[in-house]
Amino acid sequence: MSNIAEHLSNEVASTTCWVVANGVAVTLWPPDGPTPHSPDQRRPILYLVAPGGPEPPVVGDDLADWVQLPSDAEEVQERARRLMARARASGTVLAYVDADDVLRVGDRLAVLSPIEARIMRILLDHAGSVVSRTHINQEIWPAKAPDDFSILNNRVKLLRDHISRLPFRIHTVRHRGLLLEVTPSSKRLSPDISRSLGSPGETRRAPGEQQLH
Image (cartoon, rainbow, N blue to C red; front, side, top):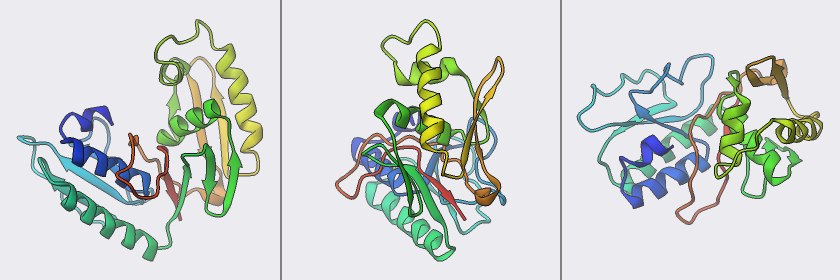
């Protein structure tokens, strides 16, 4: 989210956080990596087109839209609301870790500790991809990451137990890191690559929100 926030005013940044917290992925256009929106991983996504950058994306999906920066909060929120309405009409179900560190998948939930919630948000943000333990450690303990991975490994073990009844599996990829798998019953879960920094006054949800069909 930091590479996005530097292009936004405080008001728009706050609104963008609200957008993410209500189930719409937000990313700067052009993305650093592969386009995060594809036919087999459909969820609402709003592209922020950087000033002086390439042409805006050609949107061929009703769950994708874009705004040109600089923009105002009202426009960002209005476009996001349209995406939310379209997502609801398509039967999209959100999966996310809320502000109280509860992992919610539709009407199912798992109560997590604060550190477990942070780990889960990171894995949800990168669902289907390997995330290094070093990266996770630095995200969880930015001031001073532990010298080894024993604390993280213990927390991940507890996290696995807590999500065992939900449609997720955490795999250890030897010498590389951790990978969050969405089980076949919920294989339409799509990663939300954005992070939420706050809320402009409406219902808050923490970062790591996902959608599944």
